Length: 352
Image (cartoon, rainbow, N blue to C red; front, side, top):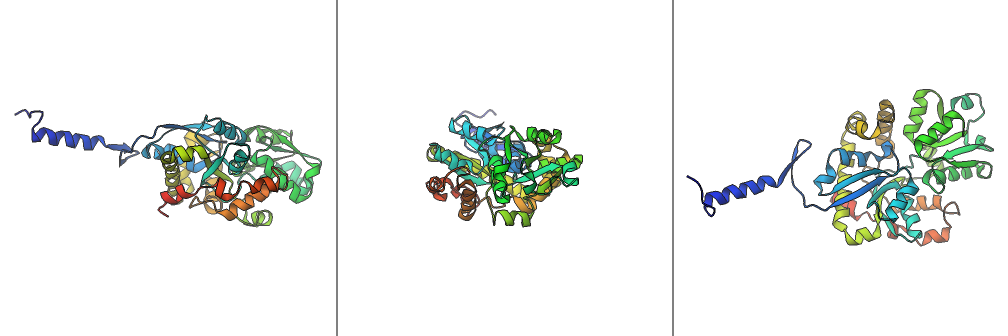
């Protein structure tokens, strides 16, 4: 017997069909479909495993589960990420945490909403093995009169190069050269265009594995880090314009919630499993073994497991930016933690 349009049987069928339509299968998991929050562009300032949470969220569909359609963009450098964010060409960026106060001082108020790490993983310095083994360059002090590679002027690698050279007492004798992206920096050092280069850990590992490079400052070790920094400093963070937080808080919450979920995946899995999840799509420019080793170290000493940037860590970062290196101390007083950091989205995602 055929059910009439108004029959109880038909109503039950339609109700069941509607319930099934509200379910989606994502990566083998059945989840209730979330309300659509629209499309956003997300830019990451380079290609490196310190962005692992972003890669995991993209690969495992966490943004989609939260109701966001996210377009990923390799924005290639911190300054370019900032430019794209300020121009509204991306809604979220992930780059050096220094970006939020810098953009705010430039008249585009920006806010850090998610912390990736507790150390500046790009604050390492590598040299050619031949120069190290010969005794020509053994320490930062030996870089006096030489060229050191960074990405761009006023970038995080440039800032850290200046800071470390000042700490070593040779800043006025070192030529910090802007070279573009991380791959170009590595190539310039390998060919001898510069005597040293700022480097991420994956760059260090690649140079080590290929046999031609050696670090003279390794920020991943606790002893070196504490000697120069004295405690946690946010290196990489996700940020958005303050205007986005005011107008689209539900979008910000969905975005941050997906990154929190990705961090929990990272915390729950070993380096090999994380590498398998993201290597082919995002990190295949590096040797796979270097990525796995880097992720293992990052899990132990670098990644911020709760993703919360504290006020103390922010103050240490401000101190690195200050004293005229990037801004005056008076300028930095106008961009305190309360103005440039909002951890409420992370806390809400974590039920804190």
